[in-house]
Length: 112
Length: 112
DNA sequence: CGCAACTGCTAAGTTTTGCAAGCAAATTTA
DNA sequence: TAAATTTGCTTGCAAAACTTAGCAGTTGCG
Image (tube, rainbow over all chains, first blue to last red; front, side, top):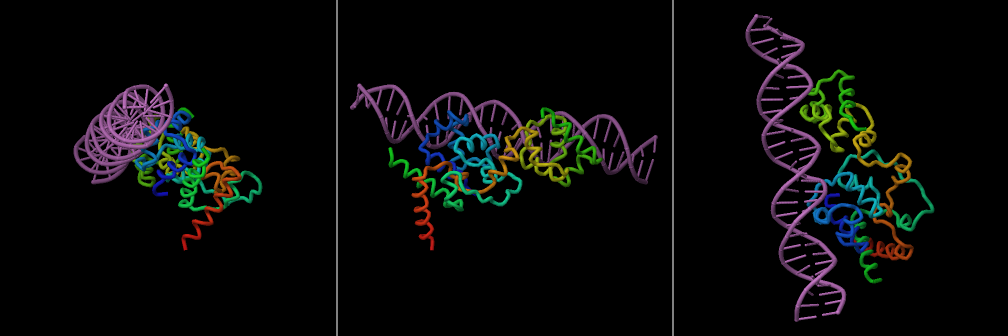
């Protein structure tokens, strides 16, 4: 992904969190998060990506690939029937991903 | 592994290669290789590790673990390699799922 | 209104990766 | 033996991650 800054911003805002709230939990400074989300960081370290992946509940490996680190081949998808709701959304593009996150932010903001 | 410098040196010497021979193929400078093998480098970048892993014919993932990057375990890895929505947008409720599916339908219809 | 806390952001500093240049010792070649 | 090449290594530097400190605008509350 060329500009994943917006993706990180969308992830955070979809959960209605501030930079400092993310900082508290992940130990990544709000200053750095701001730079990351505005596209000023080329390649955050694997450790930083791991913290954010864990906190946001997204895949560490996908984040690694997104920022351009070489990662071993991903196997073809398995047919998994049960699991959580998000599995049933199906395939989405990276573009749709950000749109959905922004939409989630909108949905969730109405409920407060 | 605390001192993986010796490991890299052993890999190279077992193949009877000079620093400059490795440099030619991997595009990692002999200066840096020297520092790496003498334990002066804390954490070479994933890209550098990937080049060396490929050239020496060892596992990239094991190298990553060796230098201390977080890596998913094989079992986790297989379970998570499917590229599904949850890994990219985080957890959502069933209610949100329906809204997202409708929204996806909307944005996809808009695009043609 | 007034002010205190909160928000995102920038500037400056530290640390580390990785490279280019070049040095001294060893090896090769003439 | 003498010169040339090769070897591993060190130094100095640029680039980039990441932090601390602090600033200006906004929000909440008396």
